[in-house]
Image (cartoon, rainbow, N blue to C red; front, top):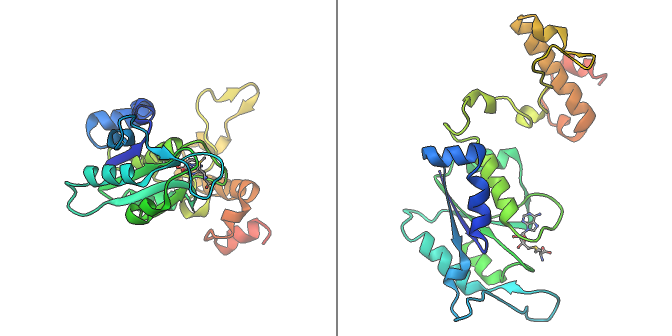
Length: 239
Ligand code: SAM
C-alpha cells in the first residue's frame, strides 16, 4: 500500500512513522509512505506557499497552485487518479469502518493543511474525501494524516506480526474489546479472572463476549445501540 502525503513538514511524517510497527512495515515493503514538501512546488523565489485570505480575517491561507502542481506531479505515474483525502476538521469523523475501506486502496494521497487552511478552489479540483479526526482544531494536518496511516496500515496483511491481533478489536460488531491480563497471575492483590486460567476455550469466549458487552454498555452506550445482541444478551443487560 502506498501513502503519498502532501505537507509542509515531510520530516514530521517520516521521522515519526519510521519507528515501531509502521517503521518495520516500511522496511519490509508492505507499507510505503512518501512525504512531499509542498514548498518544492512554490512559484516564487522565497518559496512561500501562503497568502492573505480575500475578504480579510486572521491568519494565512495555503495557496492553490503549489498544491495543484504537487498533486499533479506525484500522481503523474498513477494508472488511475488515486483518492485524495484532505485532513480537515470539516470532514467526516474518521472511524474504524473508514480505515477498513481505505485499506482496500492501493494508493492514497493525503493532503495536510496548515495556518487557516487551503484555498477552496484546489480542494474542489483534487480532493475526493474530507476526513476529520475529531471535533477539535489542530495546528496542522500532519498528526491527523499519521493517525489515518497508522489505523489503515495495521489492517494491511503482513504489517502486524500476528494478523489475528487485528481480528477482534474494538469497534468490530459495534462493541469494545474485552479486558486483557498478562503475568503475573496476581498483581498487588488483583487476580486474573479464574476463567482465563481454565484453558476452557468456549467458556473463555463466552466470558469475553460478556465483558465486551458490559464494557460497551458502560463506556460507549451509543455503540451498543447498533450492536447485534441475542435475546439472552439483551436480557442480561436488562433490556
Ligand atoms: N480554519 C480551519 C477551520 O476552522 O475549519 C482550521 C484550520 S487548522 C488551524 C489547520 C489545518 O489543520 C487544517 O487545514 C487541517 O489540515 C488540519 N486540522 C486541524 N484540525 C483537524 C482535525 N480535527 N482533523 C483533521 N485535520 C485537522
